[in-house]
Length: 402
Image (cartoon, rainbow, N blue to C red; front, side):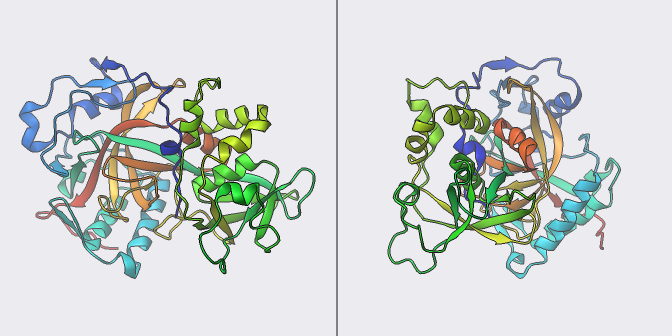
């Protein structure tokens, strides 16, 4: 389970001008997205030309009548079901086999059962290594209305960091990574009390020591991470609860400081900025009183569904609107190095995680994997697309078994 997600914490308001951009003459995946998957009951009223903002949001989209609206799949250039997708679908079936996942969900006008979700995963697996050209005979797509009830869904991302550590404190590795206190009486201390006041010092809770407290901070925001010792050995530190103090964004604090010159508010930029101003680091980090604890685990990163996460396929959702175990089709935003949205392309995602920053039907978080490359990908994704829940057709579909 994750505590926080990257881009709710890292607003790109300074990056994105969000100017209206008419998208006529689109090609490739963008043309498919703009012309297909129309809501059936509103098809006659769909604009002839979508108008996109620079962050991928459709400006002239219609207002949805319900949370989920059924849409046709027969015109979709569905993506190839690759080996990584098949492996993620296998994990999805393991997730759905857990007793705690064996209940139906009432979401809007839909009643979604674990049997439906299992059938969807099995159907998708039948087209592995191919383009599922006849998928519309077996599955239906249900588009979620997003936060604005116009189908615009925000895509952000998270990752699993790797933090260099030592098992003992020293001149370089000075900053402790703590396990959760289990015998503490009363409210747990805030970040400043822990890091500056030494509230947990000497209690035997130190798991390792890092050279950079900013690295610890961002591992806490992701909810887990790998630590790497000087001999190259890596250990996975899993989420072990928080101090239960409210989260406050350091990015919002930095944006409020007119005396600070920061070009963007990505993880890498903030890390470099604070490295150049070490006297400011505590002031910034202490703006967020929330603090995350860890525990070592012999496993790979897992989500709230208790199965390993798949890079760029697993997503975190608000399960009140999208049940864990769901398979989804997305019109996913593709953007350039300046974060300007270029087009959308279809991708398959599986709902396997949740998080405190993911709330409502208009925001999902894409897991990007482990390490620096995953951090780079996660840092700049804050764009809009569309999202469809895939379910078996209620009538006239062939049941596919294992």
